[in-house]
Amino acid sequence: MRTVDLILRKRRGEELSVEEIQFLVNGYTTGEIPDYQMSAFLMATFFSGMTDRELSALTECMMNSGEVLTLSEIPGTKVDKHSTGGVGDKTSLICAPIAAAAGVVVPMVSGRGLGHTGGTLDKLESIPGFRTDLTLDQFRAQLASLGLCFIGQTDEIAPADKRLYALRDVTGTVESIPLIASSIMSKKLAEGIGALVLDVKVGNGAFMKKQVEARKLAQAMVGIGRRLDIRVQALITDMNQPLGFAIGNALEVMEVSQTLQKSGPADLTRLSLELAARMIHLGKKADSLDDARKIAEDKLMDGSAYAKFKAVVEAQGGNSQALDRFDLLPNATGMREIVTPRAGFVSAIMAEDIGRASQMMGAGRARKEDPIDPAVGVILEVKVGEKVDAGSVLCRLYYTAEEGLEEAAELVEDAFRISGARPEERELILEVVS
Image 1 (tube, rainbow, N blue to C red):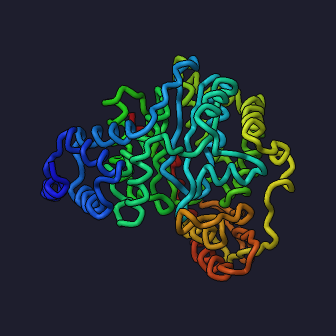
Image 2 (cartoon, rainbow, N blue to C red; image 1 turned 135 degrees about the vertical axis):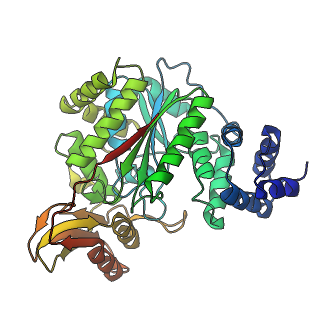
């Protein structure tokens, strides 16, 4: 079997066998297949796509390239949640504690932010002392004691995906539905979960700009789960404006704390509760989705979800007092207001531009090795549909350095659209794929 022959066949759109895909994944993971050949295969896949059989085979090979956790010593169905990335998307830090407070075991292997989208690990690490570099034994122990743990992808979990993801990032092959789906699902299935809830973002601030593409991605991941006997549900949700009001790591942790204390933004609260309810239902803690929604709301309202989050923060070395005393979190040294020059209605807030501006100030990365400034970011003062007067504050930029500030401010100013008529209200949850 020769790598070049498989590249040529995939370039022609032919279906590869399970054995041929195993040869490619195993060869690249061990270093026998060089970067330049795997890059060619990724580009061929980008243009030719994959069949369902190929996609399942690729996912399984990547999943089995490292340790596959069983977690069988911990009773109950293990359920995780994953988002495809958005601006201001901090739902994992809300829905996971709600589900865990309801008795669901939530092994959450999360990622870091890249580009204009934020990462769960970066948000958590803005809490002083919080550690995400736990060993797998520590991961298991915390799941057994608290039912929830947040860690990053380790060298043991799906190492093939780790190598392929880095290669995709530098070869222009990120936006491929088969490659995205197999990357996400290989990591998630290696956690030893029995069910998964997906939040597939669509719109200006998402990787998927069109709903039809988001639907294809959701269907691909749900299909992988079905073929590998894992229950998967996907919500397709709107990302044409930031979720909530806060964009930036410590700023988003503050909003998480407020939401878990019942005073968060309506859109963030609603989506987090729906995601949590589906985790609770798939985790067999409720007979129906309506019952699961009631449980999720109860766990938010009675404070048990907030108590769970604080317990997890303490267990992972973080200072839980920072969730009540925001002065203990990283705080910016400067603030700039962005105002509207004219009255009208906010007809659009370009989420990607807000995310990019936040990244320019240091909240995000252009490259994986770039440092993060946990204190900086943007706080919106308005949402789409609100009426504003001339001179009203649209948002506030929080910064610690002047570098990049002017460019970021200009980008944010252009991100807001003001019109004379109130725009039609958009649905937050657009579709459910299961």
